[in-house]
Amino acid sequence: MARADAILLMAYGSPDSMDDVGAYYTHIRGGREPSAAAVAGLRERYRRVGGRTPLLDITRQVQSALQHRLMGGHGHAPRVYIGMKHWHPFIGDTIRVMQADGITHVTALPLAPHYSRMSIGGYRKAVEQALAEHQAALEVRFISSWHSHPAFVELMSNRVRSALERFPAGDGGPVTTVFTAHSLPEKIRQWNDPYEDEVRRSGAAVAAGLQLDAWRVAWQSAGATGEPWIGPDILDMLTTLAREGARRVLQVPIGFVSEHLEILFDVDIEAQERAGELGITLRRTEMPNASEEFVAVLASVVADADSLTAIPVA
Ligand code: FEC
Figure 1 (cartoon, rainbow, N blue to C red):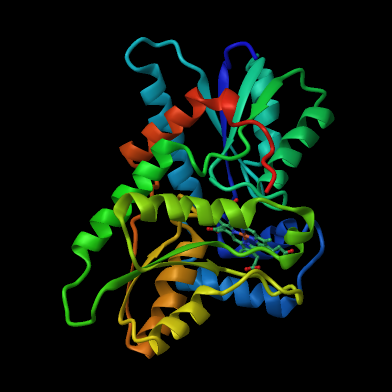
Figure 2 (cartoon, helix red, strand yellow; figure 1 turned 90 degrees about the vertical axis):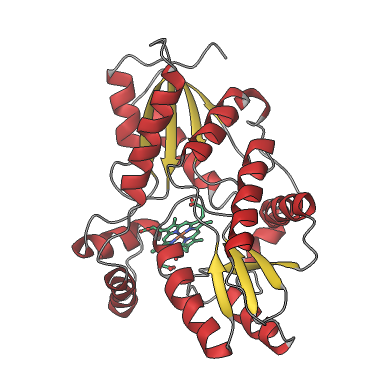
């Protein structure tokens, strides 16, 4: 593809206020309205993290920091846009703005490192639908997966190293490192979906570089859809580790790059509560958010975009 004149950063999307939670949840479910009880349960999770999450704010900060970095003092750089999968500003609306701005070549980058047809496939679908709907003559290069990009592995290794160094001293024995990513319904296995392997591989790359002996992979934030989801869930993993005698656990949510509900509630409240009940000291790595190091990773991923567009197979 000719040089991109724009980069589209895409994230999950988060409701602007508690009033939007019902409509947001309906969008996540592809238009099927969830029960009133399910909406109330979700509203309660947002209430407990302060009524909203910083996902959009952080994504805007990443946008501006990446823009600044790409300009690098010379003023000529692709323009950086953001679009969300499940809330405003929706990916489709951003594509319309790009078209109006005269953009012709786009590099689309989901802010989620691991490919699954169910997650990254959804970002791709949103882009494709918008192109068709707006008859947009944009050429899009879609980055499918960047979980094993050396710059990402290095960033996560640094995060784990510094969390281990800062782990409260005590007589709790060694720290067990648990890499987590969003669970998905088990049915993805029937599609030969690479997601589970990619999550394990990125965890293994970090563990190998740091020569960690005690590390595991677990899954978090499974939905209540009535079907089986991939496990073990982090809450069950904590119980297992406690039974095995572990007293100090570092959670590394390697499947996410930003603070949002799945971190601020599912890790910092829910998993923390479970750890407390089990007598485990639980810490987590700092999220990449809009840090300079993470923005440098994104710049490297965009620079290597041509080799990251293929849809991976397990
Ligand atoms: O901060 C925020 O307000 C938004 C946080 C948020 C992120 C996120 C990331 C991922 N999700 C993934 C898969 C699924 C599947 C379903 C599902 C459902 C929800 C619900 C909320 C939610 N997700 Fe999410 N997800 C975030 C929030 N997610 C809220 C609805 C309530 C619930 O089930 O807990 C099930 C859909 C269904 O019910 O039919 C599947 C994956 C990711 C990581 C990749 C990414 O960031 O795009 C995978 C952030």
